[in-house]
Image 1 (cartoon, rainbow, N blue to C red):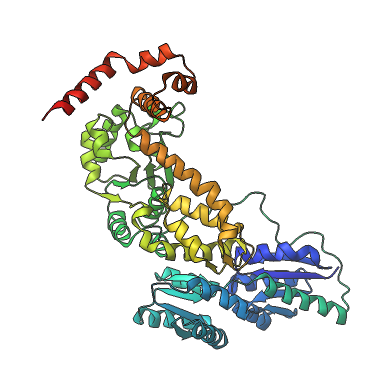
Image 2: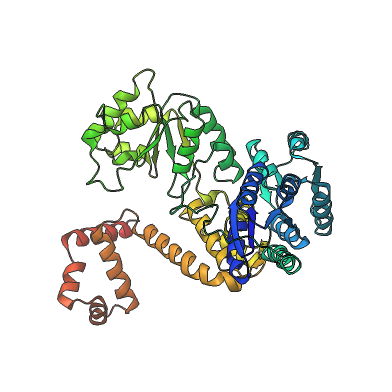
Length: 515
Protein backbone atom coordinates (compact mmCIF):
# COMPACT_ATOMS: atom_id res chain seq x y z
CA UNK A 1 0.00 0.00 0.00
CA UNK A 2 1.11 3.54 -0.79
CA UNK A 3 2.28 5.29 2.38
CA UNK A 4 2.27 9.03 3.14
CA UNK A 5 3.98 10.64 6.13
CA UNK A 6 2.73 14.06 7.32
CA UNK A 7 4.96 16.35 9.39
CA UNK A 8 2.54 18.40 11.52
CA UNK A 9 3.89 21.69 12.96
CA UNK A 10 1.33 21.77 15.80
CA UNK A 11 -1.30 19.57 17.49
CA UNK A 12 -4.37 21.03 15.77
CA UNK A 13 -2.79 20.38 12.36
CA UNK A 14 -2.17 16.76 13.34
CA UNK A 15 -5.76 16.33 14.54
CA UNK A 16 -7.15 17.74 11.28
CA UNK A 17 -5.04 15.32 9.23
CA UNK A 18 -6.21 12.38 11.34
CA UNK A 19 -9.84 13.51 10.99
CA UNK A 20 -9.69 13.18 7.17
CA UNK A 21 -7.18 10.31 6.88
CA UNK A 22 -9.82 7.58 6.55
CA UNK A 23 -11.25 9.20 3.41
CA UNK A 24 -8.03 8.56 1.43
CA UNK A 25 -7.09 5.21 -0.20
CA UNK A 26 -3.54 5.21 1.19
CA UNK A 27 -1.88 4.90 4.58
CA UNK A 28 -1.30 8.19 6.41
CA UNK A 29 1.02 8.55 9.41
CA UNK A 30 1.54 11.81 11.32
CA UNK A 31 4.46 13.08 13.40
CA UNK A 32 4.80 16.45 15.14
CA UNK A 33 7.85 18.65 14.57
CA UNK A 34 9.03 21.89 13.01
CA UNK A 35 12.18 22.71 10.97
CA UNK A 36 15.12 20.56 12.22
CA UNK A 37 12.87 18.37 14.35
CA UNK A 38 10.52 17.94 11.40
CA UNK A 39 13.45 17.14 9.13
CA UNK A 40 14.58 14.38 11.52
CA UNK A 41 11.07 12.85 11.39
CA UNK A 42 11.08 13.07 7.58
CA UNK A 43 14.49 11.36 7.30
CA UNK A 44 13.29 8.53 9.53
CA UNK A 45 10.13 8.22 7.42
CA UNK A 46 12.28 8.07 4.28
CA UNK A 47 14.43 5.36 5.84
CA UNK A 48 11.29 3.38 6.71
CA UNK A 49 10.15 3.45 3.09
CA UNK A 50 7.38 6.04 3.06
CA UNK A 51 6.55 7.12 -0.49
CA UNK A 52 5.78 10.80 -0.01
CA UNK A 53 6.08 13.38 2.76
CA UNK A 54 3.66 16.24 3.42
CA UNK A 55 4.85 19.34 5.29
CA UNK A 56 4.14 23.03 5.71
CA UNK A 57 6.11 26.22 5.13
CA UNK A 58 9.82 26.32 5.95
CA UNK A 59 9.76 22.75 7.23
CA UNK A 60 8.50 21.44 3.87
CA UNK A 61 11.22 23.36 2.02
CA UNK A 62 13.91 22.08 4.41
CA UNK A 63 12.75 18.47 3.88
CA UNK A 64 12.74 18.95 0.11
CA UNK A 65 16.36 20.17 0.22
CA UNK A 66 17.59 17.26 2.34
CA UNK A 67 15.50 14.21 1.36
CA UNK A 68 15.10 12.24 -1.87
CA UNK A 69 11.44 11.33 -1.30
CA UNK A 70 8.83 13.57 -3.01
CA UNK A 71 7.50 16.40 -0.81
CA UNK A 72 4.04 18.00 -1.02
CA UNK A 73 3.61 21.36 0.71
CA UNK A 74 0.49 22.44 2.59
CA UNK A 75 0.28 26.05 1.51
CA UNK A 76 -0.99 28.88 3.67
CA UNK A 77 -4.17 30.04 1.96
CA UNK A 78 -5.78 33.47 1.83
CA UNK A 79 -8.60 31.96 3.87
CA UNK A 80 -6.11 31.01 6.63
CA UNK A 81 -4.70 34.55 6.65
CA UNK A 82 -8.15 36.13 6.62
CA UNK A 83 -9.21 34.00 9.57
CA UNK A 84 -6.33 35.05 11.85
CA UNK A 85 -6.50 38.73 10.82
CA UNK A 86 -10.25 38.83 11.46
CA UNK A 87 -9.58 37.38 14.89
CA UNK A 88 -7.00 40.10 15.63
CA UNK A 89 -9.03 43.02 14.26
CA UNK A 90 -9.42 45.52 17.10
CA UNK A 91 -6.40 44.23 19.06
CA UNK A 92 -5.13 47.12 21.20
CA UNK A 93 -1.39 46.48 20.82
CA UNK A 94 0.93 46.81 17.80
CA UNK A 95 0.95 43.84 15.40
CA UNK A 96 3.78 42.52 13.21
CA UNK A 97 4.12 39.72 10.67
CA UNK A 98 7.38 37.76 10.49
CA UNK A 99 8.08 35.27 7.72
CA UNK A 100 9.08 34.75 4.09
CA UNK A 101 8.52 37.56 1.59
CA UNK A 102 5.57 35.77 -0.04
CA UNK A 103 3.76 35.14 3.23
CA UNK A 104 4.47 38.64 4.59
CA UNK A 105 3.23 40.19 1.33
CA UNK A 106 0.00 38.16 1.39
CA UNK A 107 -0.71 39.01 5.03
CA UNK A 108 0.04 42.71 4.49
CA UNK A 109 -2.28 42.83 1.48
CA UNK A 110 -5.26 41.31 3.33
CA UNK A 111 -4.49 43.38 6.44
CA UNK A 112 -4.70 46.54 4.32
CA UNK A 113 -8.11 45.48 3.01
CA UNK A 114 -9.27 44.93 6.61
CA UNK A 115 -7.74 48.26 7.69
CA UNK A 116 -5.41 46.55 10.17
CA UNK A 117 -1.94 48.09 10.59
CA UNK A 118 0.71 45.38 10.41
CA UNK A 119 4.49 45.92 10.53
CA UNK A 120 6.33 43.68 8.03
CA UNK A 121 9.43 41.69 9.06
CA UNK A 122 10.79 39.61 6.18
CA UNK A 123 13.22 36.74 6.82
CA UNK A 124 14.89 34.40 4.33
CA UNK A 125 15.99 31.71 6.78
CA UNK A 126 15.87 30.71 10.44
CA UNK A 127 19.13 32.53 11.18
CA UNK A 128 17.53 35.90 10.40
CA UNK A 129 14.77 35.52 13.02
CA UNK A 130 16.91 36.98 15.83
CA UNK A 131 17.61 40.13 13.80
CA UNK A 132 13.93 40.49 12.89
CA UNK A 133 12.93 40.19 16.55
CA UNK A 134 15.33 42.97 17.52
CA UNK A 135 13.69 45.13 14.86
CA UNK A 136 10.28 44.18 16.30
CA UNK A 137 11.43 45.32 19.75
CA UNK A 138 12.60 48.66 18.38
CA UNK A 139 9.25 49.10 16.62
CA UNK A 140 7.40 48.51 19.92
CA UNK A 141 5.46 45.49 18.63
CA UNK A 142 3.39 43.48 21.12
CA UNK A 143 2.09 40.64 18.96
CA UNK A 144 3.70 38.77 16.07
CA UNK A 145 1.97 36.64 13.46
CA UNK A 146 4.50 33.90 12.75
CA UNK A 147 5.11 30.25 11.93
CA UNK A 148 5.83 27.71 14.66
CA UNK A 149 9.62 28.13 14.73
CA UNK A 150 9.69 31.94 14.63
CA UNK A 151 6.74 32.10 17.03
CA UNK A 152 8.48 29.88 19.57
CA UNK A 153 11.58 32.09 19.54
CA UNK A 154 9.42 35.23 19.66
CA UNK A 155 7.66 33.99 22.80
CA UNK A 156 11.01 33.38 24.48
CA UNK A 157 11.84 37.03 23.75
CA UNK A 158 8.64 38.21 25.42
CA UNK A 159 6.31 38.68 22.43
CA UNK A 160 2.82 37.26 22.06
CA UNK A 161 2.91 34.98 19.00
CA UNK A 162 -0.14 33.95 16.98
CA UNK A 163 0.18 31.15 14.45
CA UNK A 164 -1.51 31.24 11.05
CA UNK A 165 -3.21 27.88 11.37
CA UNK A 166 -4.09 25.77 8.34
CA UNK A 167 -7.74 25.02 7.75
CA UNK A 168 -9.09 21.65 6.68
CA UNK A 169 -9.40 22.85 3.09
CA UNK A 170 -5.63 23.53 2.82
CA UNK A 171 -4.80 20.09 4.20
CA UNK A 172 -7.23 18.28 1.90
CA UNK A 173 -5.80 20.12 -1.14
CA UNK A 174 -2.33 18.75 -0.27
CA UNK A 175 -3.63 15.21 0.33
CA UNK A 176 -5.58 15.37 -2.94
CA UNK A 177 -2.28 16.18 -4.65
CA UNK A 178 -0.78 13.06 -3.04
CA UNK A 179 -3.70 11.03 -4.42
CA UNK A 180 -2.99 12.38 -7.90
CA UNK A 181 0.67 11.33 -7.57
CA UNK A 182 -0.45 7.71 -7.08
CA UNK A 183 -2.17 7.76 -10.47
CA UNK A 184 1.06 8.62 -12.31
CA UNK A 185 3.61 6.52 -10.46
CA UNK A 186 3.96 2.83 -9.66
CA UNK A 187 5.09 1.91 -6.18
CA UNK A 188 6.24 -1.61 -5.32
CA UNK A 189 7.18 -1.10 -1.68
CA UNK A 190 5.89 -3.71 0.76
CA UNK A 191 3.45 -2.53 3.42
CA UNK A 192 5.22 -1.65 6.66
CA UNK A 193 3.19 -3.13 9.47
CA UNK A 194 4.92 -1.29 12.29
CA UNK A 195 4.21 2.43 12.50
CA UNK A 196 7.33 4.55 12.71
CA UNK A 197 5.94 6.77 15.42
CA UNK A 198 3.79 4.78 17.86
CA UNK A 199 1.53 6.97 19.92
CA UNK A 200 1.89 6.97 23.70
CA UNK A 201 -0.76 5.04 25.61
CA UNK A 202 -1.51 8.10 27.76
CA UNK A 203 -0.86 11.84 27.36
CA UNK A 204 2.21 13.35 28.98
CA UNK A 205 1.52 16.50 30.97
CA UNK A 206 3.75 19.37 29.85
CA UNK A 207 2.26 22.12 32.01
CA UNK A 208 5.40 24.06 32.96
CA UNK A 209 4.48 27.70 32.27
CA UNK A 210 6.93 30.56 32.64
CA UNK A 211 6.15 34.03 33.94
CA UNK A 212 6.63 35.43 30.43
CA UNK A 213 4.09 32.98 29.00
CA UNK A 214 1.50 33.87 31.65
CA UNK A 215 1.98 37.57 30.86
CA UNK A 216 1.73 37.05 27.09
CA UNK A 217 -1.48 35.04 27.41
CA UNK A 218 -2.83 37.68 29.81
CA UNK A 219 -3.32 35.14 32.62
CA UNK A 220 -1.54 37.59 34.93
CA UNK A 221 -1.27 41.37 34.93
CA UNK A 222 1.98 43.27 34.42
CA UNK A 223 1.95 44.21 38.12
CA UNK A 224 1.73 40.56 39.19
CA UNK A 225 4.41 39.66 36.63
CA UNK A 226 6.85 42.25 38.00
CA UNK A 227 6.24 41.22 41.61
CA UNK A 228 6.57 37.50 40.81
CA UNK A 229 9.81 38.12 38.91
CA UNK A 230 11.26 39.98 41.88
CA UNK A 231 10.13 37.47 44.50
CA UNK A 232 11.08 34.36 42.49
CA UNK A 233 14.75 35.33 42.72
CA UNK A 234 14.61 35.52 46.52
CA UNK A 235 14.78 32.65 48.95
CA UNK A 236 11.82 34.03 50.87
CA UNK A 237 8.37 32.39 51.19
CA UNK A 238 5.81 33.82 48.76
CA UNK A 239 2.06 34.20 49.33
CA UNK A 240 -0.42 34.24 46.39
CA UNK A 241 -3.84 35.71 47.17
CA UNK A 242 -6.78 35.56 44.80
CA UNK A 243 -10.21 34.13 44.22
CA UNK A 244 -10.80 30.66 42.80
CA UNK A 245 -9.76 30.46 39.15
CA UNK A 246 -7.34 33.40 39.15
CA UNK A 247 -4.45 31.06 38.33
CA UNK A 248 -2.57 30.75 41.62
CA UNK A 249 -1.31 27.22 40.93
CA UNK A 250 -0.03 28.06 37.43
CA UNK A 251 1.63 31.19 38.81
CA UNK A 252 3.28 29.08 41.52
CA UNK A 253 4.65 26.77 38.80
CA UNK A 254 5.95 29.77 36.85
CA UNK A 255 7.62 31.16 39.99
CA UNK A 256 9.24 27.75 40.44
CA UNK A 257 10.50 27.88 36.83
CA UNK A 258 12.09 31.29 37.46
CA UNK A 259 13.60 30.48 40.86
CA UNK A 260 17.08 29.19 41.78
CA UNK A 261 15.34 25.84 42.49
CA UNK A 262 13.86 25.35 38.99
CA UNK A 263 15.82 22.12 38.41
CA UNK A 264 14.21 20.53 41.47
CA UNK A 265 10.72 19.04 41.97
CA UNK A 266 7.45 20.99 42.29
CA UNK A 267 5.59 19.41 45.23
CA UNK A 268 1.96 20.29 46.05
CA UNK A 269 0.17 20.08 49.40
CA UNK A 270 -3.59 20.77 49.38
CA UNK A 271 -5.00 20.39 52.92
CA UNK A 272 -8.57 20.75 51.60
CA UNK A 273 -8.37 18.04 48.93
CA UNK A 274 -8.96 15.21 51.41
CA UNK A 275 -8.22 16.28 55.00
CA UNK A 276 -8.72 12.72 56.29
CA UNK A 277 -5.82 11.36 54.20
CA UNK A 278 -3.33 14.18 54.79
CA UNK A 279 -0.81 13.07 57.39
CA UNK A 280 0.33 16.38 58.82
CA UNK A 281 2.54 14.61 61.39
CA UNK A 282 4.64 13.24 58.52
CA UNK A 283 5.02 16.65 56.87
CA UNK A 284 8.29 17.31 58.67
CA UNK A 285 9.62 13.75 58.47
CA UNK A 286 13.30 14.19 57.50
CA UNK A 287 13.29 11.16 55.18
CA UNK A 288 9.78 10.72 53.77
CA UNK A 289 7.90 13.96 54.47
CA UNK A 290 6.86 16.54 51.87
CA UNK A 291 9.67 18.83 52.94
CA UNK A 292 12.20 16.15 52.05
CA UNK A 293 10.45 15.57 48.70
CA UNK A 294 10.75 19.28 47.95
CA UNK A 295 14.52 19.22 48.58
CA UNK A 296 16.15 21.77 46.21
CA UNK A 297 12.74 22.36 44.62
CA UNK A 298 9.48 24.15 45.46
CA UNK A 299 6.78 23.25 47.99
CA UNK A 300 3.41 24.75 47.02
CA UNK A 301 0.85 24.82 49.86
CA UNK A 302 -2.72 25.63 48.83
CA UNK A 303 -5.36 26.93 51.27
CA UNK A 304 -2.73 27.69 53.91
CA UNK A 305 -5.46 28.65 56.39
CA UNK A 306 -6.65 25.01 56.36
CA UNK A 307 -3.43 23.74 57.93
CA UNK A 308 -3.80 22.81 61.62
CA UNK A 309 -2.56 25.60 63.91
CA UNK A 310 0.35 23.52 65.34
CA UNK A 311 1.54 22.81 61.76
CA UNK A 312 1.34 26.51 60.94
CA UNK A 313 3.52 27.25 63.97
CA UNK A 314 6.09 24.64 62.93
CA UNK A 315 6.16 26.02 59.38
CA UNK A 316 6.73 29.54 60.70
CA UNK A 317 9.76 28.39 62.69
CA UNK A 318 11.06 26.43 59.71
CA UNK A 319 10.75 29.43 57.38
CA UNK A 320 12.92 31.48 59.74
CA UNK A 321 15.76 29.02 59.16
CA UNK A 322 18.55 30.77 57.22
CA UNK A 323 19.49 29.33 53.80
CA UNK A 324 16.54 26.99 53.28
CA UNK A 325 17.27 24.47 50.52
CA UNK A 326 13.83 24.84 48.90
CA UNK A 327 11.33 27.51 47.83
CA UNK A 328 7.99 27.69 49.65
CA UNK A 329 4.93 29.21 47.94
CA UNK A 330 1.59 29.55 49.75
CA UNK A 331 -1.85 30.32 48.31
CA UNK A 332 -5.28 31.23 49.59
CA UNK A 333 -8.66 32.21 48.14
CA UNK A 334 -9.99 33.94 51.29
CA UNK A 335 -9.24 37.10 53.28
CA UNK A 336 -6.28 35.93 55.35
CA UNK A 337 -6.30 38.94 57.66
CA UNK A 338 -9.86 38.04 58.63
CA UNK A 339 -8.80 34.38 58.97
CA UNK A 340 -6.04 35.47 61.36
CA UNK A 341 -8.48 37.57 63.39
CA UNK A 342 -10.84 34.58 63.59
CA UNK A 343 -8.08 32.30 64.84
CA UNK A 344 -7.70 30.25 61.64
CA UNK A 345 -4.24 31.53 60.71
CA UNK A 346 -1.19 31.84 62.94
CA UNK A 347 -0.44 35.57 63.36
CA UNK A 348 3.33 35.11 63.08
CA UNK A 349 2.92 33.14 59.84
CA UNK A 350 0.51 35.75 58.43
CA UNK A 351 2.84 38.71 59.02
CA UNK A 352 5.83 36.77 57.67
CA UNK A 353 4.02 35.85 54.43
CA UNK A 354 2.40 39.26 54.00
CA UNK A 355 5.83 40.82 53.39
CA UNK A 356 6.09 39.02 50.02
CA UNK A 357 2.49 38.56 48.91
CA UNK A 358 0.92 39.02 45.47
CA UNK A 359 -2.74 39.86 44.84
CA UNK A 360 -4.25 38.28 41.70
CA UNK A 361 -7.19 40.46 40.64
CA UNK A 362 -10.51 38.80 39.71
CA UNK A 363 -11.52 38.82 36.05
CA UNK A 364 -14.44 41.21 36.70
CA UNK A 365 -11.82 43.88 37.48
CA UNK A 366 -10.07 43.28 34.14
CA UNK A 367 -13.01 43.61 31.73
CA UNK A 368 -11.12 46.20 29.65
CA UNK A 369 -8.74 43.34 28.73
CA UNK A 370 -11.47 40.76 28.12
CA UNK A 371 -11.71 41.21 24.35
CA UNK A 372 -7.97 40.66 23.81
CA UNK A 373 -8.02 37.68 26.21
CA UNK A 374 -10.81 36.07 24.19
CA UNK A 375 -8.88 36.63 20.93
CA UNK A 376 -5.74 34.99 22.33
CA UNK A 377 -7.64 32.05 23.82
CA UNK A 378 -9.47 31.43 20.52
CA UNK A 379 -6.08 31.46 18.75
CA UNK A 380 -4.85 28.87 21.28
CA UNK A 381 -7.95 26.71 20.68
CA UNK A 382 -7.54 26.92 16.90
CA UNK A 383 -3.96 25.70 17.27
CA UNK A 384 -4.69 22.90 19.75
CA UNK A 385 -8.07 21.73 18.42
CA UNK A 386 -7.70 22.30 14.68
CA UNK A 387 -10.68 24.67 14.61
CA UNK A 388 -11.02 27.70 12.33
CA UNK A 389 -12.82 30.34 14.39
CA UNK A 390 -12.00 33.90 13.30
CA UNK A 391 -14.10 36.15 15.52
CA UNK A 392 -16.82 36.56 18.13
CA UNK A 393 -19.94 38.45 17.07
CA UNK A 394 -20.56 41.69 19.05
CA UNK A 395 -23.74 40.47 20.76
CA UNK A 396 -21.93 37.36 22.04
CA UNK A 397 -19.04 39.46 23.31
CA UNK A 398 -21.45 41.81 25.13
CA UNK A 399 -23.06 38.79 26.82
CA UNK A 400 -19.61 37.62 27.95
CA UNK A 401 -18.66 41.12 29.10
CA UNK A 402 -21.84 41.53 31.17
CA UNK A 403 -21.15 38.31 33.09
CA UNK A 404 -19.45 38.53 36.52
CA UNK A 405 -17.07 35.56 36.01
CA UNK A 406 -17.01 34.03 39.51
CA UNK A 407 -14.68 31.33 38.18
CA UNK A 408 -12.32 33.94 36.71
CA UNK A 409 -9.65 32.90 34.13
CA UNK A 410 -10.34 29.19 34.63
CA UNK A 411 -14.03 29.68 33.84
CA UNK A 412 -13.30 32.00 30.90
CA UNK A 413 -11.03 29.42 29.23
CA UNK A 414 -13.60 26.67 29.77
CA UNK A 415 -16.42 28.77 28.29
CA UNK A 416 -14.32 29.85 25.27
CA UNK A 417 -13.42 26.19 24.61
CA UNK A 418 -17.12 25.25 24.66
CA UNK A 419 -18.00 28.17 22.36
CA UNK A 420 -15.28 27.16 19.88
CA UNK A 421 -16.33 23.50 19.99
CA UNK A 422 -19.95 24.47 19.38
CA UNK A 423 -19.10 26.74 16.44
CA UNK A 424 -19.32 25.32 12.90
CA UNK A 425 -18.44 28.52 11.01
CA UNK A 426 -15.73 31.19 11.12
CA UNK A 427 -17.75 33.29 13.56
CA UNK A 428 -19.09 32.55 17.03
CA UNK A 429 -22.65 33.78 16.61
CA UNK A 430 -25.41 34.05 19.20
CA UNK A 431 -27.15 31.12 17.52
CA UNK A 432 -24.24 28.77 18.24
CA UNK A 433 -23.34 30.42 21.56
CA UNK A 434 -26.81 30.54 23.13
CA UNK A 435 -26.88 26.90 24.38
CA UNK A 436 -23.49 27.39 26.07
CA UNK A 437 -24.49 30.75 27.57
CA UNK A 438 -27.81 29.40 28.82
CA UNK A 439 -26.35 26.24 30.30
CA UNK A 440 -23.24 27.65 31.97
CA UNK A 441 -23.36 31.41 32.46
CA UNK A 442 -26.97 31.47 33.69
CA UNK A 443 -26.39 28.55 36.06
CA UNK A 444 -23.24 30.11 37.52
CA UNK A 445 -24.98 33.47 37.88
CA UNK A 446 -27.71 31.77 39.91
CA UNK A 447 -25.08 30.17 42.15
CA UNK A 448 -23.44 33.57 42.66
CA UNK A 449 -26.79 35.18 43.56
CA UNK A 450 -27.47 32.39 46.05
CA UNK A 451 -24.00 32.78 47.56
CA UNK A 452 -24.46 36.55 47.87
CA UNK A 453 -27.89 36.07 49.48
CA UNK A 454 -26.53 33.55 52.01
CA UNK A 455 -23.61 35.81 52.93
CA UNK A 456 -22.95 35.39 56.66
CA UNK A 457 -26.55 34.62 57.63
CA UNK A 458 -27.24 31.84 60.11
CA UNK A 459 -29.54 28.97 59.13
CA UNK A 460 -32.24 30.44 61.40
CA UNK A 461 -31.95 33.86 59.75
CA UNK A 462 -32.26 32.33 56.26
CA UNK A 463 -35.30 30.32 57.34
CA UNK A 464 -37.06 33.41 58.74
CA UNK A 465 -36.29 35.42 55.60
CA UNK A 466 -37.84 32.67 53.44
CA UNK A 467 -40.92 32.48 55.71
CA UNK A 468 -41.41 36.27 55.61
CA UNK A 469 -41.09 36.29 51.79
CA UNK A 470 -43.68 33.50 51.35
CA UNK A 471 -46.15 35.17 53.75
CA UNK A 472 -45.78 38.45 51.89
CA UNK A 473 -46.32 36.72 48.53
CA UNK A 474 -49.47 35.05 49.94
CA UNK A 475 -50.90 38.42 51.08
CA UNK A 476 -50.40 37.52 54.78
CA UNK A 477 -52.65 34.48 54.45
CA UNK A 478 -51.18 32.15 57.12
CA UNK A 479 -52.96 29.01 55.85
CA UNK A 480 -51.71 29.36 52.24
CA UNK A 481 -48.19 30.28 53.42
CA UNK A 482 -48.03 27.23 55.72
CA UNK A 483 -49.21 24.97 52.88
CA UNK A 484 -46.52 26.33 50.52
CA UNK A 485 -43.85 25.86 53.18
CA UNK A 486 -45.00 22.29 53.89
CA UNK A 487 -45.72 22.90 57.59
CA UNK A 488 -48.89 23.34 59.68
CA UNK A 489 -50.11 26.72 60.97
CA UNK A 490 -49.04 26.07 64.56
CA UNK A 491 -45.46 25.35 63.45
CA UNK A 492 -45.51 28.49 61.33
CA UNK A 493 -46.75 30.54 64.30
CA UNK A 494 -44.07 29.04 66.59
CA UNK A 495 -41.25 29.78 64.12
CA UNK A 496 -42.42 33.39 63.71
CA UNK A 497 -42.80 33.96 67.45
CA UNK A 498 -39.60 32.57 68.93
CA UNK A 499 -38.25 34.67 71.84
CA UNK A 500 -35.31 35.80 69.73
CA UNK A 501 -37.58 36.84 66.84
CA UNK A 502 -39.94 38.69 69.18
CA UNK A 503 -36.96 40.49 70.70
CA UNK A 504 -35.81 41.59 67.23
CA UNK A 505 -39.32 42.75 66.35
CA UNK A 506 -39.59 44.74 69.59
CA UNK A 507 -36.21 46.41 68.99
CA UNK A 508 -37.17 47.21 65.38
CA UNK A 509 -40.53 48.60 66.49
CA UNK A 510 -38.86 50.70 69.18
CA UNK A 511 -36.45 52.10 66.59
CA UNK A 512 -39.36 53.07 64.35
CA UNK A 513 -41.08 54.84 67.26
CA UNK A 514 -38.09 57.08 67.93
CA UNK A 515 -38.52 60.68 66.76
